[in-house]
Length: 113
Image (cartoon, one colour):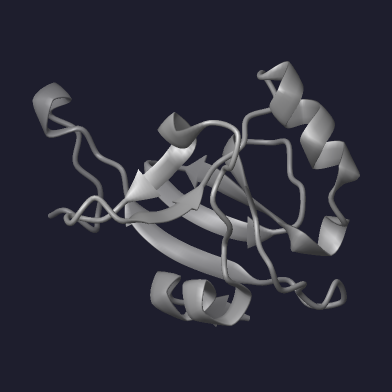
């Protein structure tokens, strides 16, 4: 199943990173939206182990395109999110976040053309 980022936020309610405000995303009004977790941070890694797997989501990158996938993934991972509402583990959910091309490095994908 594929969702937009807005549908994902509404349906699963990604949570703030409560221990480290610098790991939260903010809107243009400086209101905190949700946080990310990184397994290279020992505290984040231990915290993720305590969370039910049906509440963890993974941001991955493939060919300059970002996706949020339901579950804990390792390949091409960038960061993890924890949501208040669990997902159905029998269903793969994909959130298309869009391209991540770097204009300064003259990168361009099909979405940017």
